[in-house]
Amino acid sequence: MLCYYGPCKEGLIGEHPFAELTTEILEKRFSGALRVERERVRAVVYFENGDLIYASANLRNLRLSEYLKKRGIDIGKLSGIDSSSDSAIASSLTARGTVTQPTLAEATSEQVSDVVRVLLLWPDGKWMFDERARLTEPLRAKLQINQLLIAAARRIDLRFTASRFPNGSEVISRGSTDASNLSLTAAEGFMLSRVEEPIELDQLVTVSGLPKPEAVRTIYGLVLIGLLERQSWPYALRAGAAFRKEQPLKPGPSKPAKVEPQTAKESEAELTDFIDRIATAGNHYEVLDISTIAGPSEIKNAYYALARRFHPDRFHELAKTALHSRLESAFARITQAHEMLSNPDAKVTYDAKLAALKNAGRIAGQGSNSAPRLSDPEVSGTAGNLEVAELRFQEGVAALALREINTATAALSAAARLAPNQSRYRAYYGRALAAHPQTKRLAEAELQAAVKLEPANASYRVMLAKLYSDLGFWRRAINEVERALSLDSKNAEARKLLQSLEAKK
Image 1 (tube, one colour):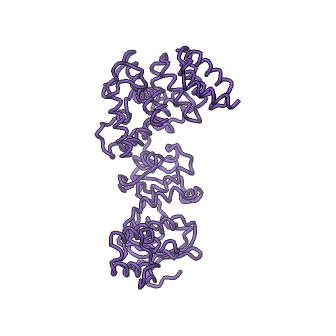
Image 2 (image 1 turned 135 degrees about the horizontal axis):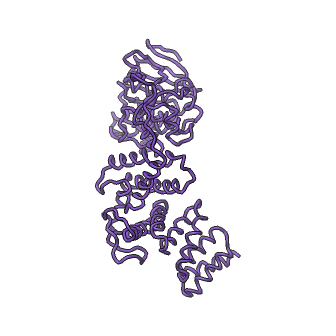
Image 3 (image 1 turned 90 degrees about the horizontal axis):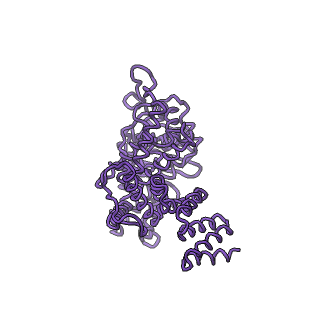
Protein backbone atom coordinates (compact mmCIF):
# COMPACT_ATOMS: atom_id res chain seq x y z
CA MET A 1 0.00 0.00 0.00
CA LEU A 2 1.69 3.20 -1.20
CA CYS A 3 1.21 6.88 -0.39
CA TYR A 4 0.46 8.62 -3.68
CA TYR A 5 -0.73 12.03 -2.61
CA GLY A 6 2.03 13.38 -0.38
CA PRO A 7 2.33 13.20 3.42
CA CYS A 8 0.80 10.06 4.77
CA LYS A 9 1.41 7.34 7.31
CA GLU A 10 1.36 3.55 6.88
CA GLY A 11 1.35 0.60 9.24
CA LEU A 12 -0.07 -2.77 10.24
CA ILE A 13 -3.50 -3.22 11.80
CA GLY A 14 -2.05 -5.75 14.24
CA GLU A 15 0.03 -2.93 15.70
CA HIS A 16 -2.48 -0.12 15.34
CA PRO A 17 -6.05 -1.49 15.11
CA PHE A 18 -8.68 0.26 13.03
CA ALA A 19 -10.60 1.19 16.19
CA GLU A 20 -7.60 2.99 17.68
CA LEU A 21 -6.79 4.73 14.39
CA THR A 22 -10.37 5.96 14.16
CA THR A 23 -10.34 7.20 17.75
CA GLU A 24 -7.08 9.06 17.13
CA ILE A 25 -8.37 10.71 13.95
CA LEU A 26 -11.58 11.78 15.67
CA GLU A 27 -9.69 13.11 18.70
CA LYS A 28 -7.21 15.12 16.63
CA ARG A 29 -9.99 16.29 14.30
CA PHE A 30 -8.04 15.22 11.21
CA SER A 31 -9.36 15.20 7.67
CA GLY A 32 -8.29 12.62 5.13
CA ALA A 33 -8.74 9.06 3.93
CA LEU A 34 -7.91 5.94 5.93
CA ARG A 35 -7.35 3.08 3.48
CA VAL A 36 -7.23 -0.47 4.82
CA GLU A 37 -6.51 -3.79 3.17
CA ARG A 38 -6.77 -7.40 4.32
CA GLU A 39 -6.22 -10.25 1.88
CA ARG A 40 -8.45 -9.33 -1.10
CA VAL A 41 -10.69 -6.93 0.77
CA ARG A 42 -10.03 -3.22 0.46
CA ALA A 43 -11.88 -0.34 2.05
CA VAL A 44 -11.55 3.40 2.44
CA VAL A 45 -12.94 5.58 5.22
CA TYR A 46 -13.17 9.37 4.85
CA PHE A 47 -12.93 11.87 7.68
CA GLU A 48 -13.67 15.58 7.68
CA ASN A 49 -12.57 17.71 10.63
CA GLY A 50 -12.78 14.76 12.97
CA ASP A 51 -16.11 13.40 11.68
CA LEU A 52 -16.39 10.04 9.93
CA ILE A 53 -18.41 10.99 6.85
CA TYR A 54 -18.20 8.00 4.47
CA ALA A 55 -16.84 4.47 4.04
CA SER A 56 -16.93 1.94 1.24
CA ALA A 57 -15.50 -1.51 0.56
CA ASN A 58 -15.07 -3.80 -2.46
CA LEU A 59 -17.35 -6.46 -0.98
CA ARG A 60 -20.51 -6.92 -3.01
CA ASN A 61 -22.81 -7.16 0.00
CA LEU A 62 -21.49 -3.78 1.20
CA ARG A 63 -22.29 -1.89 -2.02
CA LEU A 64 -24.90 0.86 -1.99
CA SER A 65 -27.06 -1.07 -4.47
CA GLU A 66 -27.64 -3.81 -1.87
CA TYR A 67 -28.95 -1.30 0.67
CA LEU A 68 -31.21 0.37 -1.87
CA LYS A 69 -32.59 -3.07 -2.82
CA LYS A 70 -33.77 -3.46 0.80
CA ARG A 71 -35.79 -0.31 0.22
CA GLY A 72 -37.46 -1.58 -2.97
CA ILE A 73 -35.05 -0.04 -5.46
CA ASP A 74 -33.43 -2.77 -7.58
CA ILE A 75 -30.66 -1.24 -9.71
CA GLY A 76 -30.52 -4.34 -11.91
CA LYS A 77 -34.06 -3.79 -13.10
CA LEU A 78 -33.51 -0.13 -14.07
CA SER A 79 -32.10 0.83 -17.48
CA GLY A 80 -29.58 3.60 -18.03
CA ILE A 81 -28.18 3.55 -14.50
CA ASP A 82 -24.45 4.06 -14.12
CA SER A 83 -23.47 1.38 -11.59
CA SER A 84 -19.69 1.80 -11.85
CA SER A 85 -19.49 3.20 -8.31
CA ASP A 86 -21.72 4.02 -5.38
CA SER A 87 -21.40 7.71 -6.21
CA ALA A 88 -22.46 7.07 -9.80
CA ILE A 89 -25.47 5.07 -8.63
CA ALA A 90 -26.51 7.83 -6.26
CA SER A 91 -26.11 10.54 -8.90
CA SER A 92 -28.06 8.59 -11.53
CA LEU A 93 -30.95 7.77 -9.23
CA THR A 94 -31.32 11.25 -7.78
CA ALA A 95 -31.09 12.85 -11.24
CA ARG A 96 -33.95 10.63 -12.43
CA GLY A 97 -35.96 11.18 -9.26
CA THR A 98 -35.99 7.43 -8.58
CA VAL A 99 -34.83 7.89 -5.01
CA THR A 100 -35.39 10.73 -2.56
CA GLN A 101 -32.57 12.34 -0.64
CA PRO A 102 -33.87 11.05 2.75
CA THR A 103 -34.00 7.47 1.42
CA LEU A 104 -30.52 7.80 -0.06
CA ALA A 105 -29.16 9.24 3.19
CA GLU A 106 -30.72 6.42 5.20
CA ALA A 107 -29.31 3.73 2.90
CA THR A 108 -25.86 5.37 2.88
CA SER A 109 -25.75 5.60 6.68
CA GLU A 110 -26.66 1.93 7.03
CA GLN A 111 -24.05 0.97 4.44
CA VAL A 112 -21.29 3.00 6.12
CA SER A 113 -22.17 1.62 9.55
CA ASP A 114 -21.87 -1.95 8.28
CA VAL A 115 -18.54 -1.25 6.58
CA VAL A 116 -17.16 0.24 9.78
CA ARG A 117 -18.44 -2.71 11.85
CA VAL A 118 -16.50 -5.10 9.62
CA LEU A 119 -13.28 -3.08 9.79
CA LEU A 120 -13.47 -2.69 13.56
CA LEU A 121 -13.11 -6.45 13.98
CA TRP A 122 -10.16 -6.97 11.63
CA PRO A 123 -7.32 -8.56 13.64
CA ASP A 124 -4.68 -7.89 10.98
CA GLY A 125 -4.07 -6.24 7.65
CA LYS A 126 -2.45 -3.00 6.41
CA TRP A 127 -3.50 0.62 6.69
CA MET A 128 -2.52 3.98 5.21
CA PHE A 129 -3.78 7.42 6.23
CA ASP A 130 -3.55 10.27 3.71
CA GLU A 131 -4.27 13.69 5.18
CA ARG A 132 -4.57 15.36 1.76
CA ALA A 133 -7.25 13.07 0.36
CA ARG A 134 -10.77 14.49 0.29
CA LEU A 135 -14.15 12.99 -0.52
CA THR A 136 -15.35 14.55 -3.77
CA GLU A 137 -18.54 12.49 -3.94
CA PRO A 138 -21.83 13.95 -2.64
CA LEU A 139 -22.46 10.98 -0.36
CA ARG A 140 -22.44 11.70 3.36
CA ALA A 141 -23.39 9.43 6.27
CA LYS A 142 -24.65 10.07 9.74
CA LEU A 143 -23.75 7.40 12.25
CA GLN A 144 -23.21 6.90 15.98
CA ILE A 145 -19.50 6.15 15.73
CA ASN A 146 -18.96 5.91 19.50
CA GLN A 147 -21.72 3.33 19.79
CA LEU A 148 -20.10 1.31 17.00
CA LEU A 149 -16.71 1.54 18.75
CA ILE A 150 -17.98 0.36 22.14
CA ALA A 151 -20.04 -2.43 20.55
CA ALA A 152 -16.97 -3.68 18.69
CA ALA A 153 -14.82 -3.52 21.82
CA ARG A 154 -17.18 -5.94 23.56
CA ARG A 155 -16.36 -8.56 20.91
CA ILE A 156 -12.59 -8.12 20.73
CA ASP A 157 -10.44 -11.04 21.85
CA LEU A 158 -9.50 -10.77 25.54
CA ARG A 159 -5.85 -11.55 24.85
CA PHE A 160 -5.65 -8.69 22.38
CA THR A 161 -7.07 -6.06 24.72
CA ALA A 162 -4.73 -7.28 27.46
CA SER A 163 -1.80 -6.68 25.10
CA ARG A 164 -2.83 -3.04 24.68
CA PHE A 165 -2.28 -2.36 28.40
CA PRO A 166 1.19 -3.72 29.26
CA ASN A 167 1.72 -1.37 32.21
CA GLY A 168 -0.47 -1.99 35.25
CA SER A 169 0.69 1.30 36.78
CA GLU A 170 -0.68 3.37 33.89
CA VAL A 171 -3.05 6.06 35.14
CA ILE A 172 -6.67 6.01 33.94
CA SER A 173 -8.76 9.18 34.22
CA ARG A 174 -12.28 10.33 33.41
CA GLY A 175 -12.74 11.57 29.85
CA SER A 176 -14.84 14.44 28.54
CA THR A 177 -17.22 12.48 26.29
CA ASP A 178 -20.92 12.88 27.05
CA ALA A 179 -22.36 9.48 27.97
CA SER A 180 -26.01 10.54 27.91
CA ASN A 181 -26.60 9.32 24.33
CA LEU A 182 -24.67 6.07 24.70
CA SER A 183 -26.07 2.68 25.60
CA LEU A 184 -23.66 1.14 28.11
CA THR A 185 -23.79 -2.27 29.74
CA ALA A 186 -24.08 -2.55 33.51
CA ALA A 187 -20.39 -3.56 33.69
CA GLU A 188 -19.34 -0.52 31.64
CA GLY A 189 -21.47 1.81 33.72
CA PHE A 190 -20.09 0.42 36.95
CA MET A 191 -16.50 0.60 35.68
CA LEU A 192 -17.02 4.23 34.73
CA SER A 193 -18.43 4.96 38.17
CA ARG A 194 -15.22 3.72 39.81
CA VAL A 195 -13.11 6.47 38.21
CA GLU A 196 -13.88 9.57 40.21
CA GLU A 197 -10.23 10.64 40.15
CA PRO A 198 -7.10 9.36 38.36
CA ILE A 199 -6.44 5.76 39.32
CA GLU A 200 -3.85 3.18 38.31
CA LEU A 201 -4.98 0.46 35.93
CA ASP A 202 -4.37 -2.42 38.35
CA GLN A 203 -6.26 -0.62 41.12
CA LEU A 204 -9.20 0.03 38.79
CA VAL A 205 -9.27 -3.65 37.81
CA THR A 206 -9.32 -4.63 41.49
CA VAL A 207 -12.21 -2.35 42.48
CA SER A 208 -14.22 -3.33 39.41
CA GLY A 209 -14.80 -6.85 40.76
CA LEU A 210 -14.46 -8.31 37.24
CA PRO A 211 -11.89 -10.91 36.17
CA LYS A 212 -8.85 -8.99 34.91
CA PRO A 213 -9.22 -9.89 31.18
CA GLU A 214 -12.86 -8.76 31.15
CA ALA A 215 -12.09 -5.65 33.19
CA VAL A 216 -9.30 -4.61 30.81
CA ARG A 217 -11.52 -5.15 27.77
CA THR A 218 -14.23 -3.02 29.39
CA ILE A 219 -11.69 -0.27 30.11
CA TYR A 220 -10.41 -0.51 26.53
CA GLY A 221 -13.89 0.10 25.14
CA LEU A 222 -14.48 3.08 27.42
CA VAL A 223 -11.10 4.53 26.41
CA LEU A 224 -11.94 4.16 22.71
CA ILE A 225 -15.02 6.35 23.05
CA GLY A 226 -13.41 8.90 25.36
CA LEU A 227 -15.36 8.17 28.52
CA LEU A 228 -12.03 7.17 30.04
CA GLU A 229 -8.57 8.45 29.14
CA ARG A 230 -5.29 6.59 29.49
CA GLN A 231 -1.95 8.12 30.36
CA SER A 232 -0.03 6.60 27.44
CA TRP A 233 -2.03 6.27 24.24
CA PRO A 234 -0.17 4.29 21.50
CA TYR A 235 -0.50 6.97 18.81
CA ALA A 236 0.17 6.04 15.20
CA LEU A 237 -0.28 9.34 13.37
CA ARG A 238 1.36 12.73 13.58
CA ALA A 239 1.81 13.46 17.29
CA GLY A 240 3.13 16.95 17.82
CA ALA A 241 2.68 18.80 21.10
CA ALA A 242 -0.66 20.19 20.02
CA PHE A 243 -2.10 16.73 19.50
CA ARG A 244 -0.74 14.58 22.33
CA LYS A 245 -3.19 13.52 24.98
CA GLU A 246 -0.95 12.02 27.65
CA GLN A 247 -2.10 13.06 31.10
CA PRO A 248 0.44 15.30 32.87
CA LEU A 249 1.32 13.98 36.28
CA LYS A 250 0.12 16.19 39.08
CA PRO A 251 2.64 17.53 41.62
CA GLY A 252 3.19 15.23 44.54
CA PRO A 253 2.77 11.46 44.68
CA SER A 254 2.19 9.80 41.31
CA LYS A 255 -0.36 7.44 42.80
CA PRO A 256 -3.89 8.72 43.44
CA ALA A 257 -4.63 9.58 47.01
CA LYS A 258 -6.24 6.75 48.91
CA VAL A 259 -9.23 7.19 51.16
CA GLU A 260 -8.82 5.62 54.54
CA PRO A 261 -11.00 2.49 54.64
CA GLN A 262 -13.80 2.14 57.12
CA THR A 263 -13.45 -0.24 59.98
CA ALA A 264 -15.17 -3.60 59.55
CA LYS A 265 -17.87 -2.63 62.05
CA GLU A 266 -18.53 0.72 60.34
CA SER A 267 -18.73 -0.97 56.95
CA GLU A 268 -21.12 -3.68 58.13
CA ALA A 269 -23.30 -1.14 59.95
CA GLU A 270 -23.56 0.98 56.81
CA LEU A 271 -24.38 -2.06 54.70
CA THR A 272 -27.06 -3.18 57.13
CA ASP A 273 -28.70 0.26 57.07
CA PHE A 274 -28.55 0.29 53.27
CA ILE A 275 -30.01 -3.21 52.94
CA ASP A 276 -32.79 -2.36 55.38
CA ARG A 277 -33.63 0.74 53.36
CA ILE A 278 -33.88 -1.28 50.15
CA ALA A 279 -35.98 -3.92 51.92
CA THR A 280 -38.48 -1.32 53.09
CA ALA A 281 -38.67 0.50 49.74
CA GLY A 282 -42.17 0.18 48.36
CA ASN A 283 -41.37 0.44 44.64
CA HIS A 284 -38.58 0.98 42.13
CA TYR A 285 -38.59 4.75 42.63
CA GLU A 286 -38.03 4.34 46.35
CA VAL A 287 -35.29 1.79 45.67
CA LEU A 288 -33.34 4.38 43.64
CA ASP A 289 -34.48 7.17 46.00
CA ILE A 290 -35.90 9.32 43.21
CA SER A 291 -39.26 10.89 42.50
CA THR A 292 -41.85 9.35 40.19
CA ILE A 293 -41.27 12.19 37.70
CA ALA A 294 -37.50 11.64 37.48
CA GLY A 295 -36.04 11.89 34.00
CA PRO A 296 -33.60 9.46 32.29
CA SER A 297 -30.49 11.31 33.49
CA GLU A 298 -31.63 11.37 37.10
CA ILE A 299 -32.49 7.65 36.97
CA LYS A 300 -29.09 6.78 35.51
CA ASN A 301 -27.18 8.99 37.96
CA ALA A 302 -29.02 7.50 40.94
CA TYR A 303 -28.16 3.97 39.83
CA TYR A 304 -24.48 4.77 39.26
CA ALA A 305 -24.26 6.48 42.65
CA LEU A 306 -25.56 3.33 44.36
CA ALA A 307 -23.29 1.13 42.25
CA ARG A 308 -20.24 3.15 43.23
CA ARG A 309 -20.94 2.66 46.91
CA PHE A 310 -22.78 -0.61 47.33
CA HIS A 311 -22.00 -3.00 44.48
CA PRO A 312 -21.51 -6.47 46.07
CA ASP A 313 -18.16 -6.92 44.31
CA ARG A 314 -16.73 -4.11 46.45
CA PHE A 315 -17.24 -6.25 49.55
CA HIS A 316 -15.46 -9.44 48.52
CA GLU A 317 -14.16 -9.85 52.07
CA LEU A 318 -17.76 -10.62 53.08
CA ALA A 319 -18.23 -13.28 50.41
CA LYS A 320 -20.28 -16.32 51.46
CA THR A 321 -21.62 -14.50 54.54
CA ALA A 322 -25.30 -13.89 55.22
CA LEU A 323 -24.73 -10.13 54.97
CA HIS A 324 -23.20 -10.47 51.51
CA SER A 325 -26.12 -12.63 50.37
CA ARG A 326 -28.54 -9.96 51.57
CA LEU A 327 -26.48 -7.31 49.76
CA GLU A 328 -26.60 -9.29 46.51
CA SER A 329 -30.36 -9.57 46.84
CA ALA A 330 -30.66 -5.85 47.52
CA PHE A 331 -28.47 -4.93 44.58
CA ALA A 332 -30.41 -7.26 42.30
CA ARG A 333 -33.43 -5.16 43.15
CA ILE A 334 -31.50 -1.97 42.39
CA THR A 335 -30.45 -3.34 39.02
CA GLN A 336 -34.00 -4.39 38.25
CA ALA A 337 -35.26 -0.94 39.21
CA HIS A 338 -32.75 0.71 36.89
CA GLU A 339 -33.51 -1.62 33.99
CA MET A 340 -37.23 -1.08 34.39
CA LEU A 341 -37.22 2.70 34.80
CA SER A 342 -34.57 3.43 32.16
CA ASN A 343 -36.66 1.68 29.50
CA PRO A 344 -39.44 4.12 28.48
CA ASP A 345 -41.91 1.40 27.45
CA ALA A 346 -41.24 -0.72 30.54
CA LYS A 347 -41.55 2.36 32.73
CA VAL A 348 -45.01 3.12 31.38
CA THR A 349 -46.10 -0.46 32.12
CA TYR A 350 -44.59 -0.32 35.59
CA ASP A 351 -46.28 3.00 36.41
CA ALA A 352 -49.59 1.49 35.36
CA LYS A 353 -48.91 -1.49 37.64
CA LEU A 354 -48.20 0.82 40.58
CA ALA A 355 -51.46 2.62 39.99
CA ALA A 356 -53.32 -0.69 39.85
CA LEU A 357 -51.69 -1.86 43.08
CA LYS A 358 -52.61 1.34 44.84
CA ASN A 359 -56.22 1.01 43.82
CA ALA A 360 -56.53 -2.74 44.32
CA GLY A 361 -55.74 -2.70 48.04
CA ARG A 362 -54.96 -6.41 48.18
CA ILE A 363 -53.12 -9.01 46.08
CA ALA A 364 -54.12 -12.62 45.54
CA GLY A 365 -57.33 -12.09 47.51
CA GLN A 366 -55.47 -11.77 50.80
CA GLY A 367 -53.94 -9.07 52.99
CA SER A 368 -55.12 -6.04 54.91
CA ASN A 369 -58.34 -4.25 54.08
CA SER A 370 -56.42 -1.30 52.68
CA ALA A 371 -53.09 -1.35 50.92
CA PRO A 372 -50.28 0.59 52.56
CA ARG A 373 -49.71 3.90 50.83
CA LEU A 374 -46.87 3.89 48.31
CA SER A 375 -45.65 7.19 49.72
CA ASP A 376 -45.60 6.13 53.38
CA PRO A 377 -42.52 7.37 55.25
CA GLU A 378 -40.04 4.89 56.69
CA VAL A 379 -41.60 3.06 59.61
CA SER A 380 -40.16 1.10 62.48
CA GLY A 381 -41.43 -1.31 65.07
CA THR A 382 -43.55 -4.45 64.73
CA ALA A 383 -46.61 -2.72 63.27
CA GLY A 384 -44.54 -0.82 60.75
CA ASN A 385 -42.64 -3.92 59.72
CA LEU A 386 -45.88 -5.81 59.11
CA GLU A 387 -47.18 -2.96 56.99
CA VAL A 388 -44.01 -2.87 54.94
CA ALA A 389 -44.02 -6.67 54.65
CA GLU A 390 -47.55 -6.60 53.26
CA LEU A 391 -46.57 -3.99 50.71
CA ARG A 392 -43.54 -5.98 49.61
CA PHE A 393 -45.72 -9.10 49.39
CA GLN A 394 -48.16 -7.29 47.12
CA GLU A 395 -45.37 -6.08 44.90
CA GLY A 396 -43.83 -9.56 44.79
CA VAL A 397 -47.03 -11.34 43.79
CA ALA A 398 -47.70 -8.72 41.12
CA ALA A 399 -44.15 -9.19 39.79
CA LEU A 400 -44.67 -12.97 39.71
CA ALA A 401 -47.75 -12.47 37.58
CA LEU A 402 -45.66 -10.38 35.16
CA ARG A 403 -42.84 -12.99 35.18
CA GLU A 404 -40.43 -10.46 36.69
CA ILE A 405 -38.73 -13.18 38.72
CA ASN A 406 -35.81 -11.13 40.09
CA THR A 407 -38.13 -8.39 41.31
CA ALA A 408 -40.53 -10.94 42.77
CA THR A 409 -37.76 -12.82 44.59
CA ALA A 410 -36.31 -9.67 46.14
CA ALA A 411 -39.72 -8.36 47.24
CA LEU A 412 -41.01 -11.66 48.63
CA SER A 413 -37.70 -12.33 50.37
CA ALA A 414 -38.07 -9.05 52.23
CA ALA A 415 -41.67 -9.84 53.15
CA ALA A 416 -40.74 -13.28 54.48
CA ARG A 417 -37.84 -11.85 56.46
CA LEU A 418 -39.93 -9.07 58.02
CA ALA A 419 -42.81 -11.41 58.92
CA PRO A 420 -41.45 -15.00 58.98
CA ASN A 421 -44.61 -16.41 60.59
CA GLN A 422 -46.86 -15.35 57.71
CA SER A 423 -47.43 -18.55 55.76
CA ARG A 424 -48.44 -16.86 52.50
CA TYR A 425 -45.23 -14.80 52.48
CA ARG A 426 -43.15 -17.96 52.84
CA ALA A 427 -45.21 -19.84 50.27
CA TYR A 428 -44.98 -17.19 47.57
CA TYR A 429 -41.31 -16.63 48.30
CA GLY A 430 -40.82 -20.34 47.71
CA ARG A 431 -42.82 -20.11 44.53
CA ALA A 432 -40.54 -17.30 43.29
CA LEU A 433 -37.43 -19.31 44.16
CA ALA A 434 -38.86 -22.31 42.33
CA ALA A 435 -39.18 -20.22 39.16
CA HIS A 436 -35.39 -20.03 38.75
CA PRO A 437 -33.31 -23.17 38.05
CA GLN A 438 -30.51 -22.15 40.41
CA THR A 439 -32.78 -21.62 43.42
CA LYS A 440 -35.25 -24.50 43.07
CA ARG A 441 -33.68 -26.43 45.93
CA LEU A 442 -33.90 -23.36 48.19
CA ALA A 443 -37.60 -23.14 47.42
CA GLU A 444 -38.30 -26.41 49.24
CA ALA A 445 -37.45 -24.97 52.68
CA GLU A 446 -39.77 -21.98 52.20
CA LEU A 447 -42.70 -24.07 50.96
CA GLN A 448 -42.25 -26.58 53.75
CA ALA A 449 -42.23 -23.68 56.23
CA ALA A 450 -45.51 -22.42 54.77
CA VAL A 451 -47.07 -25.88 55.03
CA LYS A 452 -45.90 -26.19 58.63
CA LEU A 453 -47.38 -22.77 59.50
CA GLU A 454 -50.70 -23.60 57.82
CA PRO A 455 -51.07 -27.40 57.42
CA ALA A 456 -54.67 -27.19 56.21
CA ASN A 457 -53.88 -25.01 53.20
CA ALA A 458 -54.19 -27.23 50.12
CA SER A 459 -52.73 -24.57 47.77
CA TYR A 460 -49.37 -24.58 49.54
CA ARG A 461 -49.15 -28.37 49.24
CA VAL A 462 -49.87 -28.10 45.51
CA MET A 463 -47.02 -25.57 45.19
CA LEU A 464 -44.71 -28.00 46.99
CA ALA A 465 -45.88 -30.87 44.79
CA LYS A 466 -45.12 -28.86 41.65
CA LEU A 467 -41.64 -28.19 42.95
CA TYR A 468 -41.04 -31.88 43.64
CA SER A 469 -42.32 -32.68 40.17
CA ASP A 470 -39.89 -30.19 38.59
CA LEU A 471 -37.05 -31.73 40.58
CA GLY A 472 -38.03 -35.23 39.45
CA PHE A 473 -39.17 -36.42 42.89
CA TRP A 474 -42.34 -38.12 41.60
CA ARG A 475 -43.22 -40.04 44.80
CA ARG A 476 -42.92 -36.97 46.99
CA ALA A 477 -44.97 -34.94 44.52
CA ILE A 478 -47.78 -37.53 44.48
CA ASN A 479 -47.82 -37.66 48.29
CA GLU A 480 -48.24 -33.88 48.54
CA VAL A 481 -50.97 -33.82 45.90
CA GLU A 482 -52.87 -36.57 47.69
CA ARG A 483 -52.62 -34.62 50.96
CA ALA A 484 -53.91 -31.53 49.15
CA LEU A 485 -56.91 -33.47 47.82
CA SER A 486 -57.63 -34.85 51.26
CA LEU A 487 -57.94 -31.24 52.43
CA ASP A 488 -59.81 -30.01 49.36
CA SER A 489 -61.25 -32.79 47.21
CA LYS A 490 -62.49 -30.30 44.60
CA ASN A 491 -59.12 -28.66 44.05
CA ALA A 492 -58.92 -28.67 40.23
CA GLU A 493 -55.22 -27.77 40.15
CA ALA A 494 -54.36 -30.71 42.42
CA ARG A 495 -56.42 -33.14 40.33
CA LYS A 496 -54.79 -32.00 37.10
CA LEU A 497 -51.32 -32.32 38.61
CA LEU A 498 -52.08 -35.80 39.97
CA GLN A 499 -53.13 -37.02 36.53
CA SER A 500 -49.92 -35.66 35.05
CA LEU A 501 -47.80 -37.32 37.74
CA GLU A 502 -49.46 -40.69 37.43
CA ALA A 503 -48.85 -40.60 33.69
CA LYS A 504 -45.14 -40.25 34.37
CA LYS A 505 -44.93 -43.29 36.64
